[in-house]
Amino acid sequence: MGGAAERHYDFWAPWYDRFWRRYSRRTTAALLDWVRVEPGFTVLDVGCGTGVLAEQLLARQSDIRIVGVDVSERMLERARARLAGSRAELVQARAADLPFADSTFDVVVSASAFHFFPDASASCNEMRRVLKDDGRLLMTDWSREPALMRIRDAVLRRLDSAHVRVYSSGEARAMLENAGFRVVREGGYRAGLYWMWLIEAAAASDEVAASMKTSTDQPKEKTQRSKS
View 1 (tube, rainbow, N blue to C red):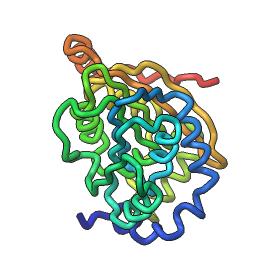
View 2 (view 1 turned 90 degrees about the horizontal axis):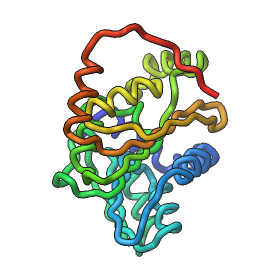
View 3 (view 1 turned 180 degrees about the horizontal axis):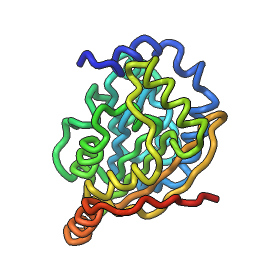
View 4 (view 1 turned 30 degrees about the vertical axis):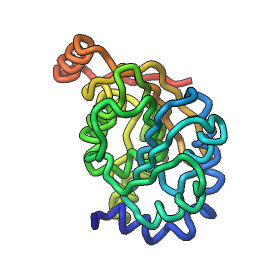
């Protein structure tokens, strides 16, 4: 694939779990608090990395099929070792070009990957395309709302070619709604020095999706959302 994110994570793969262990534990736990998987479900993990989230999902419900996608083959190698013997399939692919048929998955999850997607809007469209009409998306990532995170974002955009952009929860919500999702709930939390948002979204009906797209296309005054 040859992209910046692939090169970045191919390099970091041998040390990734050691360096990000506490962070991964916290973000995975936050997402698992919201996700619901039932026996027989098919789950897609977008930006699966070394398979930490997939492993925890299988520990919770072994009678599911998990497919993980990531741009880095080295990260996928580590995920294959972690998930050996499980019902997990691992595929090298971009979030904006998922190699699956429409309406394949009951649940789509993504943790700490959104700020690396070169085309976040296209990635939202693809996640909606492969999700069943009664499915759910659970996604968590860095939040740009705190000033410290905006500074971190600005620095990383200069120094790290793989880093694309940190989004606010409102920006992520708008992209998801434009892709045909209906946001069910949102939350925020901290993982060490990182402020995070967490979003659960359902597939919107065609009428609702069209209405939301029209409203997001109209210019409107920006308002500041308060967070508890």
